[in-house]
Length: 102
Image 1 (cartoon, rainbow, N blue to C red):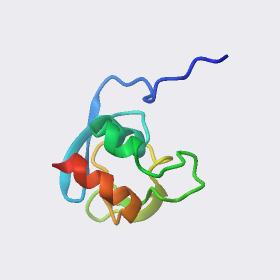
Image 2 (cartoon, rainbow, N blue to C red):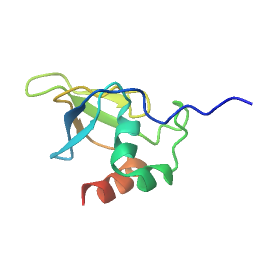
Image 3 (tube, rainbow, N blue to C red):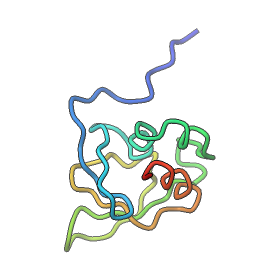
């Protein structure tokens, strides 16, 4: 039987991202969905996410700052980067994110 891997990839620091106009600090070298799970373990873990690109319940739009292009991505695949701004979050992800922001 294999040993389950930890939910987060190794990281040395937290990076600051903006989600719904609120700054949050999440572990570098991890997906956005794992970073949100770091901040709200129960809220994200209980959501209806497949974690592997099939359900699209974690779809977001993001940019890297003023004047940069807006791109679409899945939070389960998108690696967080310092300064990333997350917008237009799928309603399935929006619900748990609201509980994290409080």
